[in-house]
Length: 413
Ligand SMILES: Cc1cc2nc3c(=O)[nH]c(=O)nc-3n(C[C@H](O)[C@H](O)[C@H](O)COP(=O)(O)OP(=O)(O)OC[C@H]3O[C@@H](n4cnc5c(N)ncnc54)[C@H](O)[C@@H]3O)c2cc1C
Image 1 (cartoon, rainbow, N blue to C red):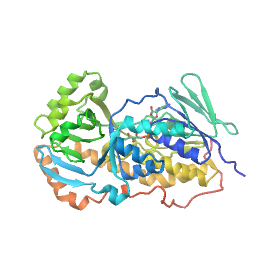
Image 2: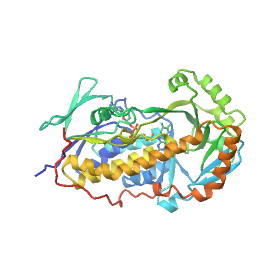
Image 3: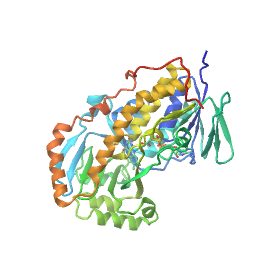
Image 4: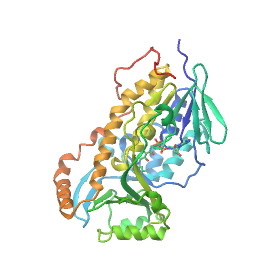
């Protein structure tokens, strides 16, 4: 008889890792999470959690606090570079999907998740960067860290993000993350700037001839309760080059790039407290998400460029469904395959959608941008509900595809 696995090693304390740890703990599995960086509550930029992700957070009792500390987003409104309204989507999300879309600081989300993990008796270790994994038959699986320490468990979950080290063990020739040629510049600004501009409780998204600018509320704090970001073609200059610049030079670059764009974009750029630069990465689909007793979840399995605003939400869904898969199947390899069979089609559909959206933020000539704007204006009323399949996904209610059970994992190392 297969023995129920008792101890999980989870690599990465971003979003998927600690949430999976909490849910596995609820399933009676001992969970140890290892994070490469020191524990910090101040890092990161802003993000939005859609109703499908909020549903997972609600299951853990975290939704009310995050809604209070973030900002409900009542719609996404599209504009042209000159400020002409082009359309509006994602209205009445709470009413339609049971949970709202919530914009918030990544640090707030991280603090809430880590706090919940601690109170759920998850063992958390910081400054533990995975170096390699040893997965030998009839032995515990061993994670070795760069500081020379190691940990043993019954199985290992790679929740270590887009640059996953676990991925290299699961798929030795795994595709590397590639730069999509778009750069992100983001940060926080005072709420009063949006209030003075009469901004609604929505995300405003402006499509330019080249690039894109977004802004919206992300929390109740007067000083930095609003976020904004610019997405623009890299023109051969990488994120590291921009990161090496000082804040004044970055601000000047943004002012030049968005010169002449509608208000309050220039004022927001002038007030950005600290500009964070990110590369926009993508990873081609992996041939498998698991090998033996190792499984990838979240960005490690299916990194998505940020243009669908879904990476965090599908990482949260992964964590929830993984716990379900392990509750219903003791044979670890089979549980992992069941998980992948269920999750892969949805994750890949979201990744493809994000890629298509990213293409709207590239370089357009004046005529190309005019045509693109007309298309958005004409099509938005018809496409406004085309994303409902993403938000409507209820992690609790999903019926998985035919499950394997009772057979041994032939791919076990
Ligand atoms: C600019 C930007 C904006 C975004 N906006 C949104 C948004 O609005 N909505 C949304 O849903 N998604 C958004 N995303 C995507 C979202 O951030 C990711 O999809 C999400 O964070 C994935 O969660 P994860 O837990 O899989 O990975 P991560 O959150 O990346 O966590 C991985 C963790 O693993 C750690 N780690 C890495 N290597 C090791 C190692 N060797 N050993 C130990 N630990 C390691 C990392 O330090 C990190 O803490 C955005 C992404 C970017 C870049």
